[in-house]
Length: 143
Image (cartoon, rainbow, N blue to C red; front, top):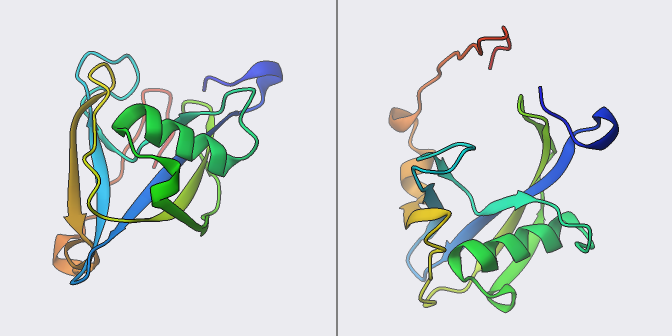
């Protein structure tokens, strides 16, 4: 497992953007570009590691969303945090949930983001779309 300074996990945050349309809620996701070293081509929330100037996990999540998809912080109402998640790659990720005002034209950072899309909450909550998989790393870690 990679880790930050002193063997501690590297702090990071993701924004879970809940776009509040009048008729339904949607979750905004990105697909990472295929040339990135970490997690190429994967579907993800906007986010990344904390900068030294970041004042909080919320600040990190909002800054990363601005950088990756052009989402201004003033269009996001922070609802709260979910529990930290420790990754096998040495990050301690804080998920930050935010309600997003619809109608913004997103702008993907072409280096990091291949695509920006929304998935209806009703699709995600439907048990027919759920699947459980076990994954084992070459080092033996299981998820």
